[in-house]
Length: 598
Image 1 (tube, one colour):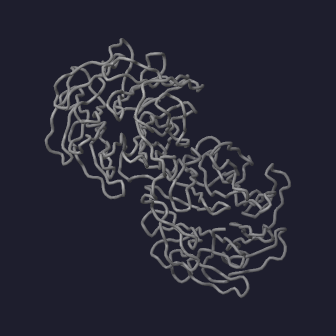
Image 2 (cartoon, rainbow, N blue to C red):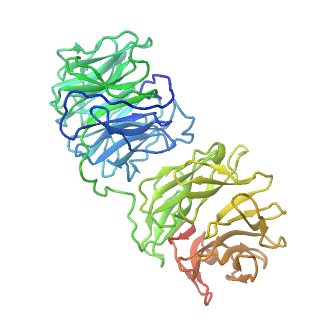
Image 3 (cartoon, one colour):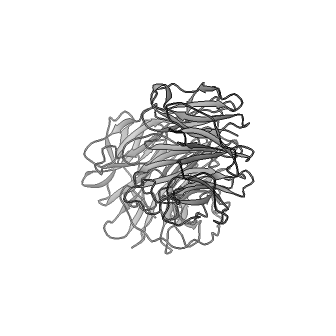
C-alpha cells in the first residue's frame, strides 16, 4: 500500500519474482534501501544498485516502511504500524511510530513515545539526530521535529496551522527542506534547524512534494502532482530556487520519491509506468532510465545507501541485562505495567519495555535469549510480542484478530519454536478473559492455530519439559481446576479436586512436579503436587493472598506474588527445603508475574 503525508491509493497485487538490470556504476558499496509488499505486507529491503542481491531486513505482521539509512552505514530508521491498536486494519489512518535497527535488521527499538503519528525520518549529516514529521496535536496537520538518535526529547522545528511534511536535511546540516500547503497548494520550502529563515524553493503551480537535497547541496529534487487527477513528474531546482527543470513528462503515470546517488550523477525513484510500482534509476538530466525491479507487487521509497561492513555498536537500548538478571517481572512502579528484570536477590531492577501500553506476563525463551509477553494495545486488542533479553528487537507476532483474538499469557515450547497462549475469540466487546481458548503460534508469528473450542474458560499454562503434554486451567467442571492434555486435545486429565479453586499452575524444571494456587485451606496459597496430581504439599501459609508461582532454574525455590505485609503486590521467593520466605521487591506500585531465566 502507498503511504504519503498526502494519501495516494494504489492497487496491491500478488507477489512474484524480481529480475535485476545492470545500470551505470555507482560508488563502491552503495546499495538501494526501499520497502516492498512482495512478501504480503510492507517490509524494509536492501538491494544492489542494479536490482540484484535482495535482502529482507524487517519481518513483522504490521507494515514497515519509509526507511532511511544513517550516514555511517550502521543504522536504519523506519516507520512502523505495529503500535497502532489495530495494525492489520488501520490503513489509511494508522498511528505510525519510528524505530531504529541495525543495518542487518537486528536490535529494533522504538525511538520515542509522541502522541499522534510519526513518520518520514531523515538523518542529520553527522548522524546524531533525525528530523521527522509528526501530528502531535492530532489535528491532521504535520509538524517538523528533530530528535537525538541516542535518546531524549523531540524538539519542534516548525509547527503552525499548515501541513509541514516530508522533511529532508541539507548536506551542510544548516537547513531542512520540506513540503507545505501554506500558500494554498503544496510547495517546497526550506527552514533553518532552529526554525528561523523560512523560504520557498519551488512552486510549479502543482502540488510539489518530497524534496531531496543533492549531495553537494546545490540542487533539490522533488515531484509535482496533478491531484486529483493521476500524474506526477520529477523536477530539479537549484537550492536557491532558480533553474527549475523537469526530468519526466508522462501522462497518467506516477513518478515520485526521488533520491540522489552519493556521487550526484543518478536519481533513483519509483514509478507505475509499467503497470505497478517499481524502482527505476536515471541520469540527473532524465536520460538513461533503467528499471531495477520486476514483479507483480509494489516497491517503494528507494534511496541510495552504503551499509557499513561491520555491525553498529550497541546503541542506546532501554536497558542492559547481563547473566545475573535472572528474573523478569511486571511492575507498575513507573505508572504503566511494564516488563523489568532483576537479580535473584531482587537487586538492580532494570526496565526492559518503555511503551505507551501496558505489558504483561513475561516468559523467557528456553535459551534465555528472548522474552515473550503480551501487550494491551487497547481493551479490544491484546497481542503477543517477542523481544531480546535486553529489551531490544521488539516484534509483535500476533495481530489480535482471527486465531489470536485477545492473545494473552505466552509460554514457550521446550525447543523454543512455538509459543502457547490463551485467546478470547469473541470479546464482548472488550477482552475480558471470558470464554477463552488455548492456541499455539510459531515463534516467528506464523502458523497460528487454536487447540480448544468449547463453552468453558481454558487458559494455557505451559508444556511439559518433554513437549508431550500441555498444562492448562479450565472451569469446564464448574470451577477453575488444573488439567493436562496432549497438543491434539487428546488425553484430557483433571489433576485437582473441584471441592476448591485451583489455578495458576507451573511446571518444575524437571517436569516431575507442578506448583499451583489453591484456596482449599481458606485463602489463596501456593501448593506443589506431583505431575499426576498426587502428593499435594502446602508451601505457603499466610493470611494474605499468594499468587502466580514460578520455579527457579534449579528447582529449589518458587517465586510468587503476594499482598502480605500490607503491600499492594510484591514478589517473594520460598525455599522448598525449609519453606523460608524472602521478599525481593519493595518498590511503590505492583510487582508481579515474576519468571526465572533458565
